Image 1 (cartoon, rainbow, N blue to C red):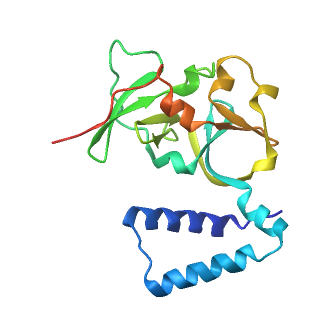
Image 2: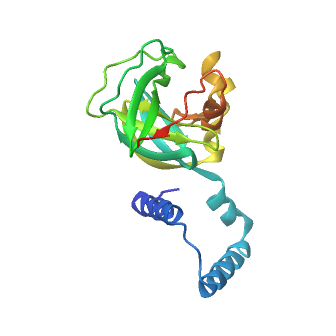
Length: 200
């Protein structure tokens, strides 16, 4: 199947804007939405499966490998600039940075996956992850962009990785894109970092 990536990216961006603005449909819009859903449900099952059996991810590079995280766990992606190291912190803690008035912890998760560390470049990005309880950034050597991945193309990480690497993985695609389990990373008590705080 071929995807119209331009249209996909535009829809993802539009959805993000709607979420940020707290959009609420009018009565007419609600009726249109319900009618549209009814038409979709009336279609043949295989058509519905094609539209639902996918995940939306942000694709990026760590070392020589390509990784991805589900967009639902990502707040934003920003340049890796002015990161301040913190003495006495674990090796995976790169430091802290100011992100829109918040002091955010930044992690280098290459340590978790035994990927050689490298110096930050002008291509390095910080991907801000969030859950109900935690928020922090992870370093990406290069951000590639949004991608739609069919669920049936994802293999179990048990078939590919062993040891610590598999604990934070959802799986690996046929194209060798490693999909991280953001929920496990954000909730792992061994890597819980200090909460962000607003600058006053």
